[in-house]
Length: 175
Image (cartoon, rainbow, N blue to C red; front, top):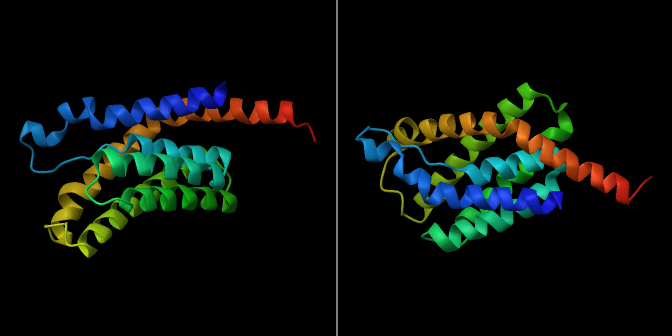
């Protein structure tokens, strides 16, 4: 049941990022910069940090593929980028203790790396019409800041859901 609740939570946030949050996006308010909500990615990164890199990789694969199919222009770009981001988040946790500060810094780096990887792949396929400086100042950095704020909000609920999954694993498979 806890895993179902976790997956349902990420799915609901995925749907919200593509629908409701677009209404309150900065571009609709006439601002010169824009934020791209990546709620499912933030959740995948947090899952990877709390449950392990393999679990994060699976969630990144599933929600990246959904992103490609529902909202993407090229199939595979979001799948690869979300998988890589989630997997590296899980790898970083192996090197450091999982404290609030480490999760915050790692999430910021992973989100920036994800946005940069997306821009690079879109640029490779000649879909990105803007230069690097414009993208950094007007989309990548505002998006990272927006998604870090969301990660701060989701830190405790995701940690509790992942802890309940870990506790259930321990109860089912005692060592």
